[in-house]
Amino acid sequence: MKAQKLFSYVRRAVSDYDMIQSGDKIAVGISGGKDSLTLLYALHGLQRFYPQKFELTALTVDLGFGIQDFTQIKEFCSRFHIRYDVIPTNIAEIVFEKRKETNPCSLCAKMRKGALNEYAKKLGCNKIAYAHHRDDMIETAFLSLIYEGRFYCFSPVTYLDRMQLTVIRPMMYIPEADVIGFSRKYELPVAKNPCPVDGHTKREYVKNLIRKLNRENPGCKECFFTAILRGGF
Image (tube, rainbow, N blue to C red; front, side, top):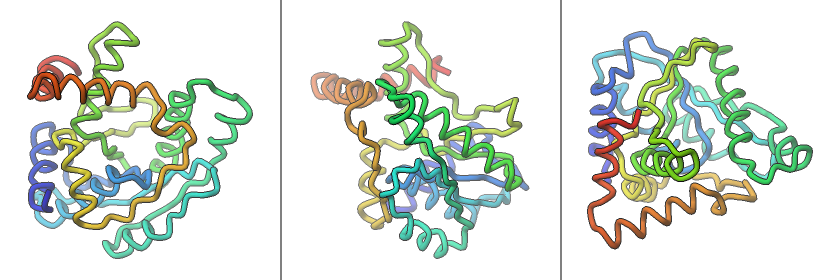
């Protein structure tokens, strides 16, 4: 995927769901993975031609594993003249050593989002951009169906009353395969995820299940996504 196609996807989502208004200060959550770096690239590109003027800042929540190097990400942000802050936490210690969670993803995500929201508010941001793409949305709906007995997916725009922050998801139309291709083509500085359960989660199981269904029923992923847009939010 070329940059122009990326910008087109993101502009469509931003326009369809009125994600950005003039004067917004948007914190982009940077995990270090391909998705969040692609999002930062896309929003920086959108800044140049979108009629609503907005500011960007990039934030990474350091989970405290002590082995993730953010140097290249810092240089990447510097090249775009975007402020980049790393938020230190002891989330890894709490989740894996103190709590010894057998299903750590939920607690980790909750604590990570809490740290990100608090820091974004401190910087005066009114919005946070998450890098959820189309496949993330499909997988979330399947997780909800299989493990919760309901048809649910996160919304493209979510207002957090308690924090007075709005979460936006500008990559919602982009297939994961395109994100992978983009990150490789433009050599984004991906920092490997240090989480010990990465690749061994319920989400990974659902990802493989959807891949199998689409292989046996070509095009069914498109149908899943259409169903989400029609009634999953």
